Each structure stands twice: as structure tokens, then as C-alpha cells.
Image: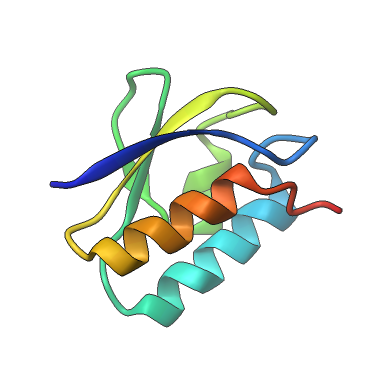
Length: 85
């Protein structure tokens, strides 16, 4: 599955607000997207709760994966942004 490694841009990491915005964007794409942190198992990026379980902090590298290139790019760009601003 195609993937992209990005650094978490949100100053508080992938907590409630960023995780919710990312999960909503994944739902809008209508295709599966996963996120993995620290070499761990990937989680469904369409679930804010599962994203928060990653414990990813600002600057941590995560791997975003999807078979859909547009969805992959969109979600990877969101992870790299400071969604708390």
C-alpha cells in the first residue's frame, strides 16, 4: 500500500481536535486510510479515538497509508499541519 512519512505538525500532537479533523477528512474521502506511529501497527485514520491511541506528539514521525493517492496526500498534509492553530 502506498504510504508517506510525515512529522506531526500540531503543537499538542494527535490529540482530540487534530484527530477529529483528520477522521472527518478520511470519512469525506470514502476510502480506507491508516496511520502508524513509531513502527507500531497501523490504525484506522477514520477513527479519532484510534488516532489518539497512537500517542503521537508534535514532531513525531507517522506513516500515513492509502491505496488512493489523493486521500493519502490530503491526510498526510493534514497530519503535517498545526490543526490546533
